[in-house]
Length: 334
Image 1 (cartoon, rainbow, N blue to C red):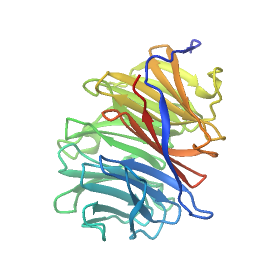
Image 2 (cartoon, rainbow, N blue to C red):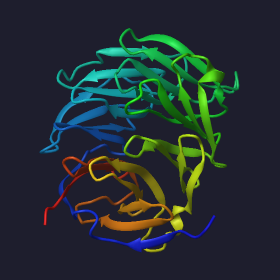
Image 3 (tube, one colour):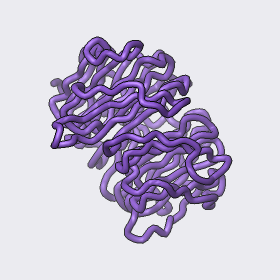
Image 4 (cartoon, rainbow, N blue to C red):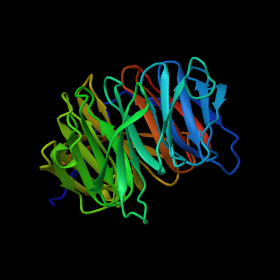
């Protein structure tokens, strides 16, 4: 791996400023995940509840109660529907217009650790933790209209599935990643596990997150639990290995939060954090990271930021962390 060039470039993004901040009053509990649409912000916490806030005021609208164990992931699929997957073995669909119990429940027989819904909402895909009794981690495929199990893959991963992401325009394609170090790319037009696997990236380390990016979602990114960062083609070829992001040098980085692709400007960003609650944003070039800005303020975070949701169309960001704080940031026009 060659050394990665790291530069400062403050004219790529408009400056973000904190516009709202609330302490959720969770006591010893903290925020796991945050997602938003044009009206709401949803935050899952370590007490197994999901709280839905008004985006403009961050006032609590309603609390969603269903899961009995840790909520592993949440995703906002469109303006109306929120999905949550839990270690209790359930994937729940919530209608945010109602604010009551789930409107649909997908039941699996193992703790869920990851999921996604494909681009036309015809299939829900779940990933499980590794079960020592069977020495398997599974990927399950549901008909999302009937909540019926279509198929499952039991040989693709040998440890916990950490992320599943469906292709944004091709309903039969998806990727999965795992603590076994693999990022798998599938086409499940037919549910044949061996034939469905298109390509494999072996990161050499436990994978934390992976996802598609690019104008046609033709590339993959990979973030590991060792805080390494790499880019790949859908065929599994390495594009660039950035190594350990904690060594960028310009700013303090302790961990990656996630990556975010802006389809409007066709720019790709790496978002990182540190243990003091600072959020750093890097524009990603091949062989180079450009530090754009730091989200840091008296009205920001004071501890690890667990999750961040970035709406590129409105240039707004919501973040949540281990300090039990929810922050809203807005780009300021020049």
